[in-house]
Length: 48
Length: 567
Image (cartoon, rainbow over all chains, first blue to last red; front, top):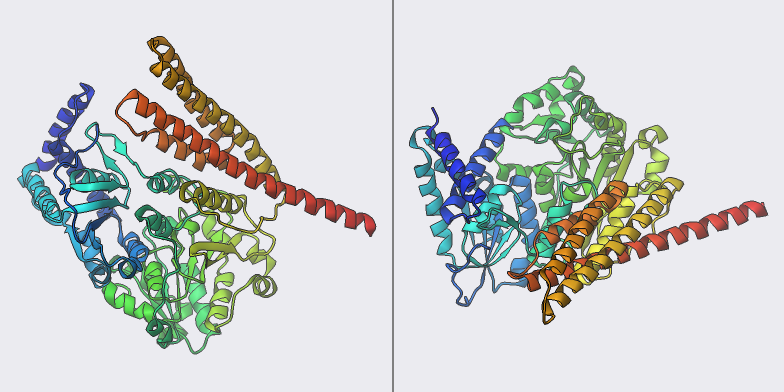
């Protein structure tokens, strides 16, 4: 079980909905996307 | 909608703060240092801070502290610690702490040099009066408002036609005048050991030769240079690979002069080892940049997705051997079963070059021709770096051979400098072959199309502005003109398919069009007009350069045919 990944997936569903409805993101949304990106880069880095 | 900078301190600081955001790897961090090396001396009134990832910045702290007033490190290991059980809230807290630290810095200009998605999102969260480089807006769209970042975004890693070294691009983005790196008297007077530092590894397999080839190079080098020592360097995860080389039976007789420190040095210690050497030899990696910062001569073997013009160590007399393989340089995602480019650089040539450099002799076109087999030269490009008016330049050392890509890179260098910086660069007119002549003729046709499309773009942008300012603006007409502009944008992309050497102009145009200024139709249309105008200027400059080159080629051909007739 990975609570972080579950949280990210839920937040991403919400963010996608926000954007599809034509609404702007918030600073909190940008922070969540940033964390997801950093996490992905770290995983990629650890494979190298 | 754009990210608000309201939180940033708008009051004027006595020492305005420039923050460089560089989240990518060690090599990029060293190149960032090279970009700002002279800046501290020439602009002491600025406070310069760096924002980097902990895992890359900490090992380089010995270097970074010389050039930055403060280094903020983003420690993702701490941020993601216990993520499986602690979830998102703990990581969010970590990011909030980091951003509030940066908030207290009152940044005047935030310059994002890393162009990764994470750096772009981080740039949108850091309060700053001005933002340069990419950042995301609240509609999740990438914003790049300065021209040099747009050039970087549209050319680097998009093909092989970027003419600039990354250090030079960083300088242009920051606004630093191009200049040669200053070598201190102490640095040039420093005695060097009869030592060659070899880093035979790279961040991925397609960028590095297999061990056997390095064994051949090291064997020949130790055999030919009986007083020199070879030191193998590398990271902890490269220890096994280094042992495959050192334990090869061919190298056993030389074990006293082959030292393996792979995985045994910190980067600071590695920097000292490189600083003490007469030569560094290796693939494109952080160690080459570390050598350049220590003024140690370098020989780089570029393979796979490495672009020599972007990453050759930023110093005078940096040598770079690159294959002429058709698919070189590739993209990391391209499938590659055979790594033909690895076979196209002969180890004999590398050993010969090392011998020549270790004997303190110059390498020039004459030596290359007279001292190396034509077979070994037929599949390589060989470059040497120099500075021309402060600009980093790679000259081809193989007489009579100039790739079409080399010719276009020179043209792009002249074109970007002229259009963006209003600076005229002078380079000799390249000599064409029948093949490159044909490619240039194709490009002329493409440029004609691009120029016409830019003229149409300006015309329809003007029509929209005229319609808006009329007493009874027609929405239908405005829509019709906008549709025409969309068609023009689409047609530009079609030109790219038939004239691939024009890709940088077309890609740059796309990035420019995607970042128009303004929050209403008038301002956006004006911005679109200027974008087409600039595109017309770019195509005109490029057209003139190609035309002049072709004219020179024709004059040369006529002279030759006349002298043939006289024979």
